[in-house]
Image (cartoon, rainbow, N blue to C red; front, top):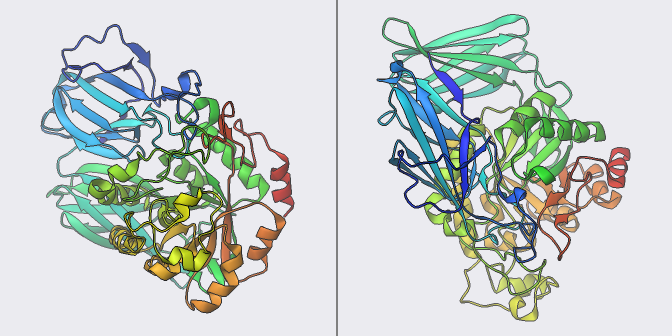
Length: 561
């Protein structure tokens, strides 16, 4: 059977570049001992010479090493190494063998190291490069800031993220469809267990395919009652002997979005009462323990919140595990920028000139792998109801332009100097966004056909004209409540919700008083590092709670509403 080994302990760390440290014979004796998750940026002094957008904290280049002893039985087994997240531009070696590079700092990625793993001592070496700190619009952290694990299994066992479970109602019962991929198993078996034991089971032949399982009168998952089952998946050889096993939490629920009546969960019409959250935790930086997320989510639950938006990147898997267990509906977001780099503030918010480094440099080559990877990793979480392919990608002239900007908005944008409000045909054309949105939506549908695709639009009145909004299944409006009624009438069949909203009673009334509005996500649930107005302020104070998770007056105002 397979074994998953957590590798968070016993790492060695060196801040600074060390050419040659990819060699497993390198002497790391003088390096510092660290435990993962680890964020080296938050350990350093704040300094106004660094970028305001990312919290006046440094980046740099650093190396991580891990000595690993494997047993004699590793020969002939499949060995996979998984990083939950490395910010940013990780390069990885295993026993001096180069495995590859992953630039996106929020991607979970796996390498098959079977060809290089050996009984006895092994060495993992990771180089992390974040030399440009004006690389984001919020604090990112630096380093291996999420879990690392090693999985040892049979070569014919389950592929990475190779089981996908969906459910449909059959009267009072539920029919589960289980799609699976293995490395060559002869058959697979599945058993669903609940609090009272075995609920249902099924099997299928062949290395990949699907199976169906009827579950009698299941307890349905919801925010008020987040019932979870465990699906035990077993891959078997020709003699029926188990060669690999994995366990997946399963929440059985049904949902739909209706253009006229909003959001329905298990047949009940409910409003999404959400908050946006960034991934840091103040003094802990990006290396956030699961217990901190649990404390935050329980506070949100007490306030009346039932939904989370992961702004603006794939979240820590621990956050989704807690949303499953505690009962939160999740908008799982992939990107903050596509091909065009947004303005990155480095000497105060909206202080020109900006810098323009960021994920856009990697998007053309990596967007498919990063989006598919997020969806395959997260698609078994019952909490996830929406895949978001982007946040405010359509911000006018930042960097995409169109002559329609003047027609729609009268070139009026107080956040930009006069020179940047003008149409410049030498910049990327906003019509490109519709093309990319259709491509990303198709990628998402191919990886998961059970959930709709959305994007948080900053200027829907513009994206309605360019075709961007038409590429989406569900359309998010950021701070555009004034267009709800008009667009509901103008675009029959469009599902609308507030993907990012202010906290006033008036903004909540748009949701409360209009059946066709599914809900809203407040900016933000909790304060976060970065997006600083000017030195010496080092955080955004937009949250309903402060960095330590203590409630602010807005928390109680929201609870009352």
